[in-house]
View 1 (tube, rainbow, N blue to C red):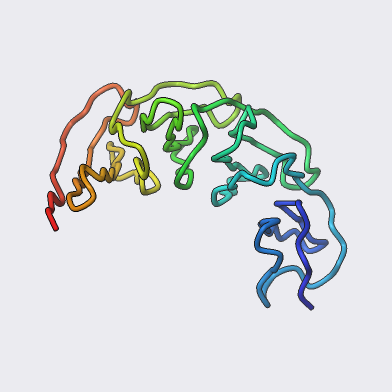
View 2: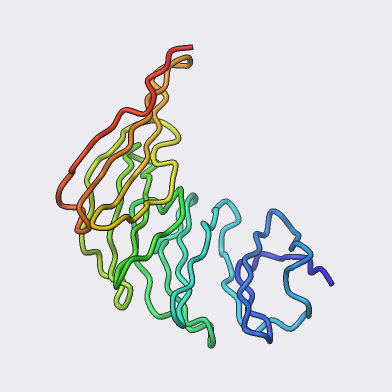
Length: 193
């Protein structure tokens, strides 16, 4: 009933279900694929990377990769055939999931070279970058800790910054859907331990 995972990340079973498996976990839960028949897969060329939660919209699956040096790191695949539709390079990839709204996807990025975190808006059909927030947080680790949330005409983004070993700052940003305008910046926590 259970399958052992390999370096393959996505499996589409004969019933049309898409399952994500990470090579370093080596296990798919009880409700995972019920057969050994793999219809297609994405093979990770480097094991030091982390694939973020895939998002399915229509007949496409979208996912990003964080870590390592694989570029591009944002992908769109046809869910039925496993054919790559497009790919895009987004800084060092995403540390959180993808959000889809209308004809765009929003992805949080964290560039491990510059320690800068920002959010990108990408066209669902072409993979073209349509906008980005610019630097939201600059920090050695953590950065953007949540998937962007869409509510009405706003994109909400949570950031986390470790200021010192005993002090953190957490902010909630509100941006316009095109990411061109910051509407609000709310301090959620500013703690010293």
